[in-house]
Each structure stands twice: as structure tokens, then as C-alpha cells.
Amino acid sequence: MKISYEVPLVKQGLQECTQASVTQLLNYYGINKTIEEVKKEVPVYVSPEGKPVGTSLGHMGCYLLQQGFQTTFHIVDVEIFDRSWKELTSEQLVQKLQERKQFIRHSRYEQEAFDLIFDGYISFLRSGGKIELPIIDEAYLVKQLEQAPFLAVVSYNFLHSDSKYRYDNEHNINVRDDIKGNPTTHAIIVSGYEEGKFSIVDPDEENGGKKTISASQLIGAIYLAETDFDSLVLTVSK
Image (cartoon, rainbow, N blue to C red; front, side):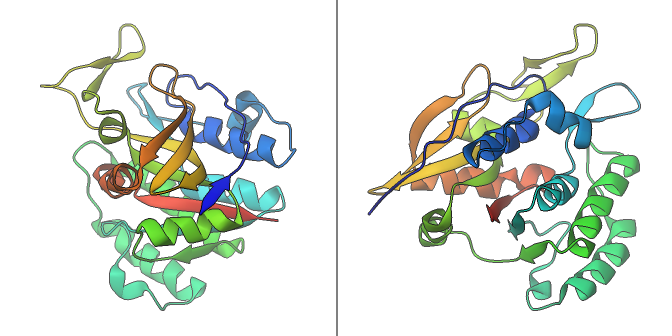
């Protein structure tokens, strides 16, 4: 089986991978947006210390709904979500998320960040977005790709076999540091498949581009995005 979509490559700035990947997806559908235009709608969250942390995926899902797409999150995270929630309705998921928020903890994120994350998911569900809690394997990804290209949140370090990073406040950049650094997550578009390998469109300035990777590398990178509770795939359809 061969699947291939021509998704344009858009290069990102610091912590803009989600906006860049969504821009790639929108441009594929003929909606000509820039990263800056998408950032105005869904900005990069900045911590009280001035560190760019990332983007609320739920709010990005709301943005895609507003663009006229049916939008689904396929989530394998087990920190925010729970596998026992698989059969719950959207209304029941909202209730569970509201209850879970007061008990969530992360070694690097303060509560303000989680307020944003949970509000994003709850707003997404209340806006008509759909959440699935599947097992993501090669067959599952191929099934989604048969419909359209999709966004995947992955472990940056595993995907690129790259070092951990830490944020340099003085120069406003991320620097490699395999001792003091932290693993990071990243957003890409999956655009094709053939004989056990997936094509990706990666907006990263240094390691990105259009490339082909093995199914095991992609799946491993998706699951390892659990370091930031981001392990998911986002699909859209008109």
C-alpha cells in the first residue's frame, strides 16, 4: 500500500511547532495562513518566568473546529486522561477532566499551565470536538492516513535521536544539555506511508524537513510524548 499527500513545508520559530504544523495542514487544504496568523488565534504559552512552554492542544483543536474541520484527538496519555474513560460521552469526559485537574502534577509545569491545558480540552469537547482513547499502532495510523494527512505530537529527542535541551533565559534560546536538560515534545505532520515507513513533514528549523521514518520510530516517538502528557494524534476532515 502506498499513500502520499503533498503537504507544504513551513519552518517554525522557537516553540512554534504546533502552529507551524497546523499551518502546514491548513495550507494543504487550501487555507492560506501564516504561522503568525495562527499564533494570534492560539498563542504559545509563556511561563511567569518568561519561558515559552508550548501551546494548548485543546485550544488548537477549537481553532480547527472554527476553520470548519471535524477534529478528533486520538490520545494515549494516561496522566491527564484515564483508559477507563474510553466509553464515556463528551459531557462525561468534561466532568472527569474537571475532577482530575486538582490532582495533576508535573515536575516542570506550574498549575497555571495546567489550567490552560485543561481549559483547552474542555473547551474542545464543548465545541463539538471528539476524543478517542485508542491503541495507536501501525495499522491504526495507516487507517487514519487513508483519510487524510494528520498531526502527531511526538518526543523531539526520540524522533531526532537528539540531546535533551534547557532554556537559556539570557539569550532566549533552547540549548543542548544532556545532563541538566529536559526532554521536549514536538508537532509534525504525517503525510504518507509505504512498506512500513511513514513520510513526515517536520517544521523544525534544524532537524526538520520532508523525510521518511520507520513505523516503529514514529510510534515510539508518539508514545514518548507522554513526558509532557502530549502523546496523541490529531485528525481533521471537512
